[in-house]
Length: 306
Image (cartoon, one colour):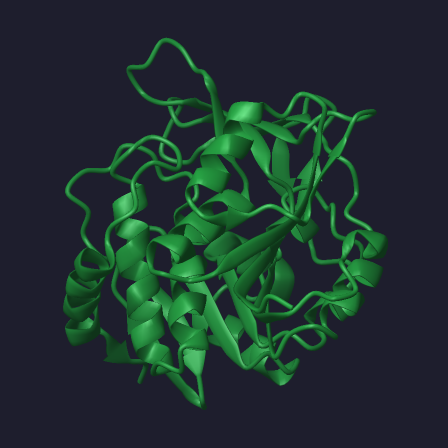
């Protein structure tokens, strides 16, 4: 039986990314399984996915992932469905506008292999595609359960525009060891506006480690009874921020399953995320040496929350 370091559960996506000063968009491979897996794989982790796509998922995406060492034995293609697809518009202002174009099939408990064996399982829905029954089954296969709740708090208008609402089912937090979310998503989950209180709220619910990313502002990281501000590693340029949070958690979990100090793991996550934003889509990933160099700078600047 193969033991993976990280298995990511959620939809692959076909992204259409509109950047400033770019007249055209083209289909780009997206979704948490892409960014988490490629970031972790670049750092030497053994990775797999549990995901479902539709008949329109390009074969070239599958070849791309496989060529980079991502195990796809848990990927299912539904010939009667379409792949989850988003239009991401960064050209209209400071914050992106996210529009759901297509929604893929639900990932059921039956889609989880009975012989799954992984050191960490990262659950990352993007369009509410992971039911609670699936989540509960996943908890029986790993010693580290990680959650990005974005797909549980997203609401979709008739035109597909994405907004955030409250987390309706708090059971998704049960058994979660690592919680990673953006500031706005953490606000939707906890009902708090202060990151420190967000983390305290989540810790009271049993979450062991909390990562709240805040764009260019330092992330807040809580673990082992302490809280830290983890600075954002400085990229050479910012081209496309899509997937930065997924890369953060992919690198974080890679270091965590190796037994590294939790604060160092968060610094590795920050460093890895700074490389992916330098290029369009899932094409910018630093080497282990490059990531560790930036992580060292972040670690030296990290501070304890007073």
